[in-house]
Amino acid sequence: MSNVNEAENKSKEFLDGEWMIRSCDVYEDEYSDCTSLKARFNQYFIFGEYIDCSQWKRDADNCVRWKEKQDVKSAKELIESERIRRLQRLKGHYSNNVWTKRTEPPKDWDKPLPNYLQKEYEHTYLNIKAKEMKGELPPSFDASTNCAIL
Image (cartoon, rainbow, N blue to C red):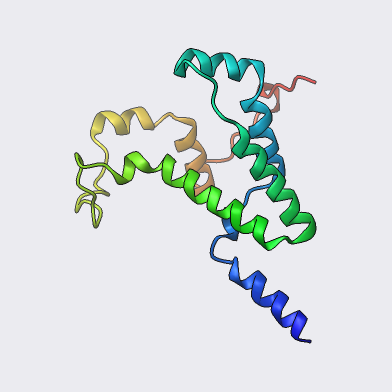
């Protein structure tokens, strides 16, 4: 019985970061894309050297070990890799010192659109469908205007 409780505690331990683990196919696709001829040409053109793709391979292997064998160590490594990747992606956002971040929306965020924009919006597909859904207009379905290429 204690083994069952230990297994439950180990799985609960990862609830904080487990949502970051993607499908294993994603990691494998990223690795194959990173090592493709087209990507290598682009990397050399942009950076003057090839990018190290080994992290994608490690992530793919860790993902498979986590999904198939519930290997806790692999899951921890994968979550840490995702955290690092996420921090690198958001580095510009966090280090921004030009714009001040809002704490609440502007007071007039829901004011009506200017007249010229309202006039443009009148005949848009979105407006017509919204009016149809509200019952302000009868449904406009014309089967002859639809096209299907098989």
